[in-house]
Each structure stands twice: as structure tokens, then as C-alpha cells.
Image (cartoon, rainbow, N blue to C red; front, side):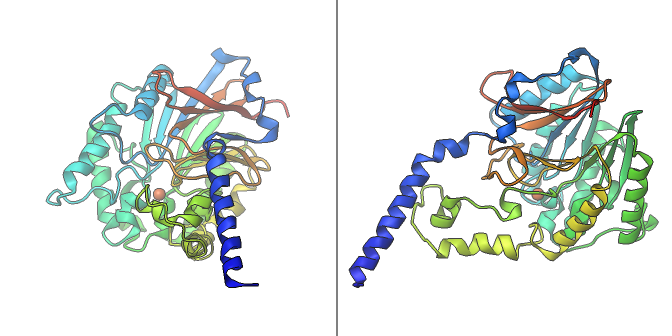
Length: 397
Ligand SMILES: [Fe+2]
């Protein structure tokens, strides 16, 4: 075959891919529903007035809109104020982009403070439980100095609310922190960033931590889950156990073909093959923040081995900037990291719902023992849009 023919075929293939990408872009922006969930709007709780406790989950909200109203935080505020004292809100980490809370003399300190304060003010006059956990960005992007940055953020959050129960686990410790909510629900908070962090990682009583070793952490986690076996258990961490997005190595066709659009959104320069190097690296080698990295892999493996022993366990994380609900046997995995940023997500096996859109999730625990998940997204109206609803735990099985 002559050279010009090879180039022509490659050009046609590239053009076809680009056209396919353009024509399917609307579909990709729409939420994905598992085929069993297509009629989700038809099912709703029958006992609306009997909600015993509600938990709101929002992650990666660390760069909120400062000069204009932040529609996602405003929507969250509306919902939490309505839910009141029988509810909790968890900020799932990456509360300050890009490097957490810098020292007061650092030029980035003022902006960091404003970003955190915007989230704290969302909770003014809220009477429910409020908890911030930390993510990689809060730990100076997982690098040296992260421990100090996270302690500065903890001090700020604790001072704002006048409480030592609002930034967990405290002192950058791995956890687990058990929060018994009522007879039917216990929440367990863990610090997944501790496992993948490169700098100082505190342990032991001298640093204000309950555990002295990694082994003791897993032992205490199992003890907490075992003790609450008859109840619903919600485990909260920053890093997802399942990811259908970047941290799981899932990149869009656009990122493979036009990688420079990541640098600037108008840089549509086709770089097929070369553009796939970065996504392949993230999928198979990865940084410490990716599921493919040995440290993340080992933490995930050990946690999953424990979680799978407990029916009715829900694990909620952020880290990926989108909304995902994944069901694996009797366990439920939530990714709610679309507090202020949105990145690509793709449906994969076991996905019940995924959407690349700003928003947050809500779990309603009923007196009947039913648990309903709701996904809320800002849509320009004060009341937002319910993007998905599902009874994830049923009293009658
Ligand atoms: Fe993160």
C-alpha cells in the first residue's frame, strides 16, 4: 500500500472518531442509569414522614465560587437547614485547593482561608452534626508539609465551630473514629490519605492517635464494624474503593485524542497514540492518589476484604469529581466528589448511576430500616434537581 493511502485511511479514521465524539457529547453529559434504574422516578419512599436520620455527603468542595453565589453550596444549605438536628453533613476531603491551609505568612494563605470559610459559612445556624475529613490536597497534595497543613486546617475548623468533633480523624491520625448515631446507624470515619501520604504520618498516643501501627488500625476497624454488625454502617473516607473516573484510570476519548485540552480547553490538537500515554500511566502505574499505585492498591485490598464481610455497609468517598453509585453484592459504594469541580466519569460494570455534574448525595435512614439514596444537583433553580433516587437497603429482603 502506498504511503498516501495509509495517511488517508488514518485521516478518515481520525475524522470518524472526532465526529463520533462530537455527536455523542450530549449523551456523555447525561447521567447514566443502569437498565434496572431507568424508571427510578416511579419509585419513592412510602413513609416520607418517618425518616430517622439523614446524612449529606459532599466532597472536593475546596474551590467554591467566592465572587458569585455558589449554587451547589447554596442548594446544600437549603437541604441541611430543612433536615435540622436529626442529620449530619460530611465534607469528604479536598476542602482547600490546591495545597490545603498554608502558613499565615504564605501568599496562598488568604485565598485558602476564603475557600474554607465559604464552606464553613454554609453550615451557619445548622443544628445537625458537621464533620470535615481531609483529602490529598489538604495534605499539601500528599507531599512533605502535609501533616502541618492538615493540622492548621483542623485548628481553623475547630475554632470556627468551637468543637473538637468537627474535623476527623483528629491530628492527621489514621482513625478509625466511631460515631454512634442511634440504635440503627453507626458512622465510622477513616483517614485514607494517611495510607498514601509521602511525608510525616502520625501514629501513637504521643501524636494524639489511638493506634500505634497499621495492624492496630485494621484491628480497631474490624472491632468497630463487628460491634455494629446488626446496624447499618456508613464508613467515610476520602479515597474511593471503586472508581469509574480518573483515579480508577478511566479517561475519555477526548483525553486520548486531544490531551492538550487538559492544559487549555481550546487546544484541540489531535495527538493520537501520544495522547494515550498519560491515561495508560494513570491506569497501570499511577501516582499515589491513583488506584493503580501499590500503596493505594494495598490499602484498598485490605479495606475491601473487611467491608465485604458486612451486609448493609455503605462506603462513601470523594476524590473523583463526579457522582457515582456502585453496588457490589450487599455493599454500597458512593463517590460524591463533585462539590465544586466536574471531570469525566464512565459507566462500568456494577454502576447503578454515574454523572459528571456538580452535586451531592443524601442518605435517608428510615424507622422502617429502609435506606434511600438521593443525588441532588444544582440546576439554576433554588430547589435543585433530583438526579437519582434509589432504595439501597430494604427492611424486607
Ligand atoms: Fe482527592
